[in-house]
Image (cartoon, rainbow, N blue to C red; front, side, top):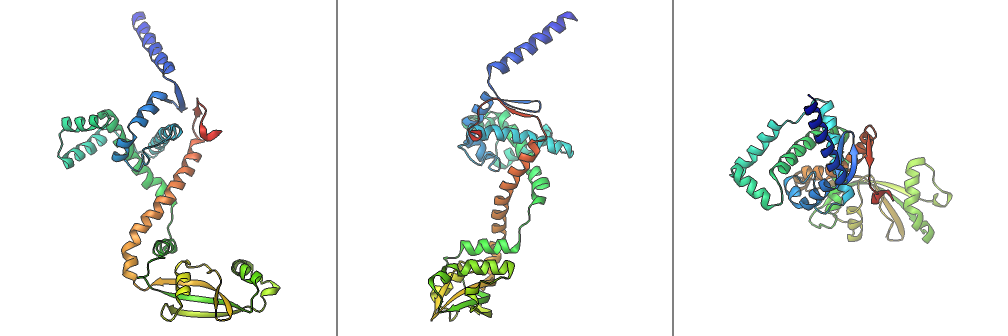
Length: 307
């Protein structure tokens, strides 16, 4: 029995010594992140990106970013565990086998392919586990927090296609105009209307402003300058002032629809995915900051983002 205890302490001391010799970068709960671990990930980021772009989106990540990525992995794993999602080896193995079958590779050929890309099979196995976990995390935790309105989809579509002359629009507009406006009034015109929309207060020097509601306006008959101005103005926004005859006009775009609606419908899902990706990135950062505060987290080096 004494002999077994001696062996245990010998092994424990050796493991502790190895951790000390390998610089500790951070600790998250009972997980240690070492410099060699960070360097290894940094050395094969390009291969990791090819396998799992949602996680390893950048093949030129800094040391701080890699440390945070590892921390994020443990936070996700812990959260999924709380909700009963444990990604075991058998589930990962099933995914790996399905990939091999799809690529027409046996295990030996897969290992040779990974080695040629500076990845061990064990690393690949864990990347697949991380990817499964991240997809569940994204679908179960992040996605319910994000809403995408039809207006956001339309605005991005219009922004992407504002220079495309093949698209024509129809509008519901409110025309605000001033006759004999001074340069100062012209410069203030749009901001005055934006404030007026909120508080209903119109400055004294804009008391002569007139309005006109224009419904179902198509681009037929509009001047090229006004068409360009309306195309780059989103629904629910004011245009910049434009001079028409002797008056200065600002148009409020109450509604804006693409005449060639089939073009918009074809692009709708792609645009939704683009907006989701943008929102998810910000939401994930907020989630990790909040979730990280619930765990023991300590860095053992000077981070560039903390200077």
